[in-house]
Length: 284
Image (cartoon, rainbow, N blue to C red):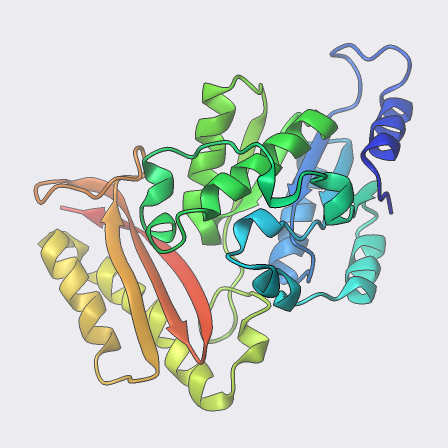
């Protein structure tokens, strides 16, 4: 468990050896907020498959939250995290404090996510992706990974990280890993365990809505969205925030005549907790 940026650089230097040219061990980074679950386990295993050395960050990034109170309320399970990371034989766990990692606090210099960063999740939280990319960029500079691994539950985040890597010439391979789901189809997350039984039943309609969208994709975009909306009708516990179909190459909304691969995105609040999900669909 490493707490400071200096110790992180030192440890990585030891692992890479005195000759830190391109022939050293391949390093993978998995950036998390802690509160690890089965989805994170899959990311770490994918990182192990892709590299010789796995670095996992468990930094709770305050720049992705609206207020200090929201940051403080984010679930934490340090003992459980330590056990998972030990069982997975992670080489380096980076768990800095906010004061160590972001000494300027919320006044830190930011990476701007651009137009796509202000859509979907960014429309509801315009600060969010700038905060995410700022911390990812700093981790990239510190760790200098060959590979960075992300889950497909938040494909907008993965898309923007890939664009940042391309535009800022980080020279990192970005790998995405399929979403791990519960028995009722929800993406595994720390929020699922916070739902009561009634809210859990309601939340399970979100992946059902995406299935309805996929099943009607051969009828066009409008039919696809209408089918997803119909799957949610009559469930007062769901507060839908957005439901969109986007081009995976641009993450912009598809035109009515779009055919081929697309992504259906959904976000909603259930029982006071936000859920995001997505599904690949084939428009005809």
